[in-house]
Length: 456
Image (cartoon, one colour):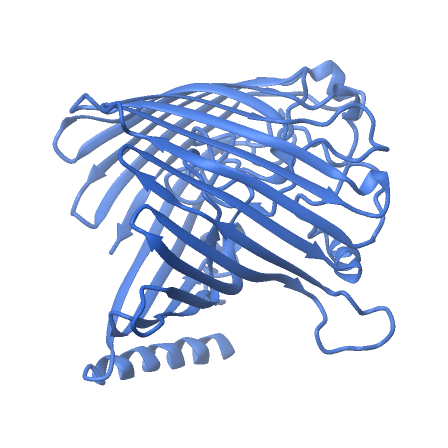
C-alpha cells in the first residue's frame, strides 16, 4: 500500500506541475524494456541446477522527468521499476500474480543550474557520475548514481575543468556511540576535458577515503566493492587514489582510435590491505563504409600474483555498471539480463576481439557481430580463494571464446525489436579448478534473448 501511495503522489505531483506550465515546463524521457530470455549454463557448469536451460521474462521501466524553469535551471527526477533481476522477473517480486509489489525506486534526483552571468554549471543531488572512458561504454572505475556535487567550469573553448565531491557510503550518521566514528566513504574528483581538432582526451584524478567503521561495516555486509584484497585484510581505514585519461582521435578520418589508461591504488594499515593495479584498452574503428563499422579492440587489466600477504595486484574499482566488451561474458547485452555482467571479480584478464557493428542492408534492420578471445592474468595458485570465482574470474590457465550476433529492427522511431544470440566456449582448466571444487564439470554457455525496447 505504501508503494501505491508513493506512486500516486508522484503522478499527482507530475501532473500538477504540468498544469502549471507558466512556471515550469515538464519533459519526460525514458527507456522501457521487456525481455524474453532463454539461457543455458550461465554459470559455466554442467548440471549444477543454476541457470541450466532456463526461460525467464524480465521487465524494467526507467522514466525521467525534467522540470525546466529556464535554460539555466532545472530539476531532474528519474525513477525505476525493476532495479534487480528479482524485481524485473515476471512472477518475481514485482510481477507476481495477485500479489503485486511494483516497487518504484528513485534513480536520480538532482538540481541542475548555472551561476547567473556565467557558463559555470552545477549539479547537486543524487546523480550519475561516470569517469572519462572512450572504450567499453563506461568507466571501469566508477559509473553509477551517487550523492554529490559536480561543477563544470569552461576555461576556453578547448578546455574545461570539472570538479566534484561525492559521499559514496554512510551507514550510520546519527548514532554517536563508541565505535561508530569514521562511518563514511567520501570522494573528490578532478577532470580536465580537452577538445582539439581531431583529438579529445580527458585526464582525471580521484581520491577517496573510506573510514575504519565504514570498511568494517561494508565487510560485514559484503559491500566492499573492489577495494579489498584476497588476503586477511584489516578493517582499518583506506586511502584510495585513481588517475588516468581517455583518448579519442578522428584526425585520420575515416579511421577512429579510442583508448583508456587507468591506474588505482589502495593504502591501508597492513601490507595485506594494499591494492594497486592498472588497465588499458584500445579500439580502432573504420567508419568509411555505409553499411557497417568494423572495430578491432583490445583490453588488459593487471591480475593477482601468488602471494596474498602483500595485498592485491588488481586495480581497485567502485562500480563499472556499463563497461563491457562483447555482449555476454563481460556484459553489454541489448536489454536486461542477457549477459553475465561485469563485476570486480572479473578483473585480471586480457581480451582481443573484432566487431562488425551496425551491419545494415535493409532499411530499419541492423546487426552487430562480435568474436572475442579472453584469457586471465591472475595466478592459478589463488584458485580456491574467495576473491577468485569460477565462471567469473579468469586465471592464467583459463580462457573463453565468445561469439555474439545481435539484431535490431526499428518498428517505430522510438520502438525496436531485438534478438541477441550468444555463445561462450568454456576454456577454464577443469583439473585446476577441481582442486577447490571436486564436483565441478564445466560446460559452454548459450543465450537467446528477444524483446522490445521503447525509448522516448
